Length: 332
Image (tube, rainbow, N blue to C red; front, top):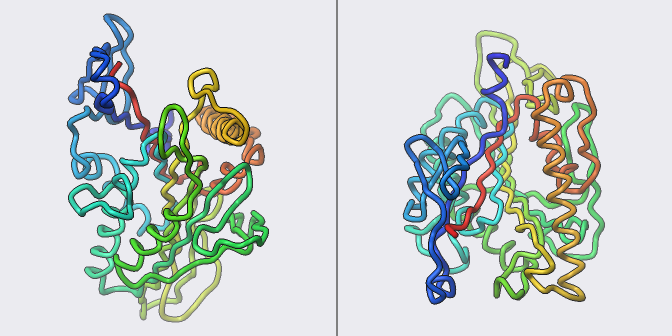
């Protein structure tokens, strides 16, 4: 493995959830052993799996954030795109119902937003602009959760190879409250529905994105406008006399969990939603698998166009982009 391969590969964190009330009532027992010190999970007596991070059911939101997410945020200010996936972990991502939770239970997104704005306040060498968008992928349609209407949203690449969503709204944020307000607004209209497994199941994949633009003052030299482009490298776009420009995206992706029809007993509309959910997850898995293959990553085919979610995240997966996948594991 090349020296920089491990630095830029997808990192994986596993959070083991506690038993649900109905599982406790059936007196179910745990069949896994958790070893956070070595980042290992042991199933039964033999099967051992090692990850970048392992968190037990008693792990606090703040501990998970400080350990696995916060170290990645400096990369955003260096001009790299960063993507945080949560698979079956809406609680980890937002802290549960973002409309009513208290600060103690805040998940990754509100905590990351605070870190971003704290960094902005401590930076005196540049001007930083922050804006946000909130998109939902429902049945392979892209929906703007901050401007819900019937308009069609189209995904394209710009001249630098960066992914842009034509027609999506982007909102300037001046404070933490601005961002949290947008997050609550979008979450309030996201598609959810009752299934046999969950009374408020996410019926879509959602992407909340912060766009961080920096204008760094440099009076001693001709400076460049630079941006993290598709291959992850920071490249010059234009010149000015007194400042350079850095742009990066921070994606928070809440993936709906994979659904087995035999288990969920979904029919009708819920069944069609399950098909789309699973299709997007399969496409994402294929992209991550291809990116983990050195031959494909350096010149082979990466199937970004197989789904809307992989198409949307094309410039934030692979290359030198930073990616963390947080997944849920049952104790049983």
